[in-house]
Image (cartoon, rainbow, N blue to C red; front, side, top):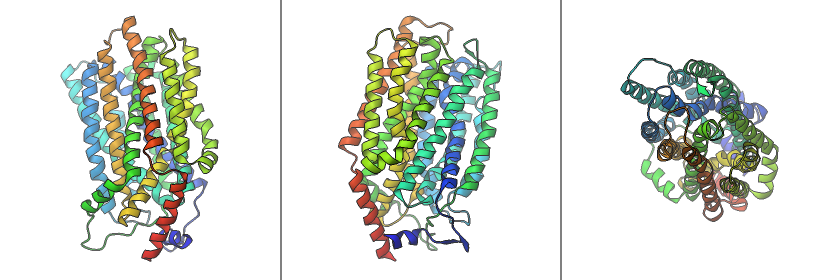
Length: 469
């Protein structure tokens, strides 16, 4: 196994020694998702309320926009993943150069979505939303696909990859803390969203995002060198598809991730309305984000010991059981106070954090399994397919939030009826409770790579690599 790993981790890269995997890689990878979520979490948290309350677009129209855009993004994910896999490896690696090139237009598009344009018609606002939001989604894909694919080539060791997954989630969590906890204190004035302040916040986060991307490029190192295709050789989609059909770990985690992300996005979007309208305290969103950060960051030190003892599948399953049970408990508590809501929700956030810290390590296992089946590494394509599922989750979540708000009777008036408020609370608690428990059952009864089988995959793949030398 050691020889096989050496074949994929050469001691030289352009005649320079490659430093061992360490804290520099972990922090660099954290910065990458920090940069991603300075854009992604900003959009997830505030774009819908910006469209409904500032542009005056109906919630149903926004839901349709989100659904259409995310479905298109899902297609571009696959196309971009195949494109990346077909590119030659440079002196900086296969993926890092694309993060550097595409991050600049991405952050510009992120700010443009929140540009206040007063005095225009509803049709203009809707058209502007479609153009800028779809453009942002395509540019986000061009950065996120190489970033996510890169985890599988930073190290071949499963423990290192689990660590990268945790550090990536920490980056996302820190961005969530800054945006969801800090931004509401600035962008809301008298419990109403300020258009000018929202744009200033978007511009600031774009500047911070580009700084994080540059840090990721500078600190990260691609160690597994993916061989370039021979002249005239092309990627065989038929061969890839044949492997995908047999890749049970990938198929299972795709379904679980779709459901998980759909719920995460739903909760993120609906919480703005939950705290603003049901609890009458928009800035309480900051407290929720702080609790989520504490739950995730507090779980991080336990991640590697728990995974080493029990396995990724086992720890992630427990996390989903805990999260689902907490949300169902919230739904059945009548006339709940904000304090009790936060206490019970915090228990669920611990379970949420455990699953979220591990999820990216599942993807690298699926990439390895695909290589074991087909004999070829297609990191970009497999990650793009995984991202496809996530985008579908985003599409359904964006559409679900808008349609759910319309269903419960939400309008852009200052005060909602009690019936509407109760409907918002149901969407924010019962729906995530049911879906998180569904993910739990999928992991327990369908996902095949428990601790023992994951270790065996490492051995089998190493032997197969060594046999091809």
